[in-house]
Picture 1 (cartoon, rainbow, N blue to C red):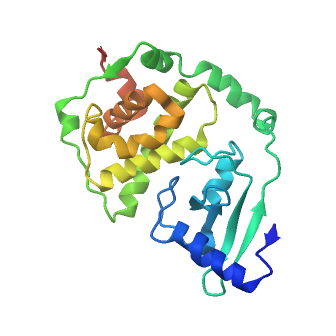
Picture 2 (picture 1 turned 60 degrees about the horizontal axis):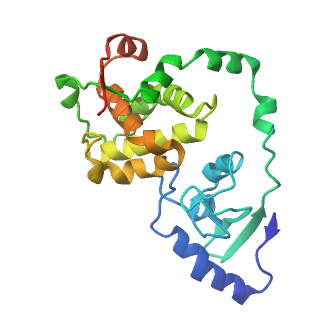
Length: 246
């Protein structure tokens, strides 16, 4: 980690003109929490800002900005607005073999058995049929931290399973977090609409497109159907009905 510029005027200018505008009034695109200077990281190339914890996890998988896809190998962090100081952290080279070498064999075996049915749902372009009771289960959770946590705990395992099926990745943890945060944001803003109404939902599903591509809308619809039901995963899988997309 490198210290900020030795020139105080240059350092203050950097904080005022670059770092602070990148953080001010912004939320982390990954976890959607409001950014605070001390906990933020501003990518040095594209100047997009994230929670340092979120972008650090992301950087262990990819070195492209989640927002603009620009390559990065460093960020500004440990930012103090009062003293106009910051640090530039340079990242060591990404070892693409680390994740493969450290995965538990049991996880790999489990993953190989998971998802044939769910992969076929997406490959065959099937779509869960919403029940009338599901359509009435809109939730207003603004300010209710406990309710948000319960929803995340419930949908997290489902999201992980679906992403494993779509992506073929046994550990899509970062994207699970992104999808969970986006779904909570959609509930908070009361934009509970069906996935075919993409003009309304697009601000929520757009961040997922870089990962899921043409299956993004299908995934979001499936997520809504499960989340709006009152069933656990096992029961839901047993009773859900599907129709063929046109």
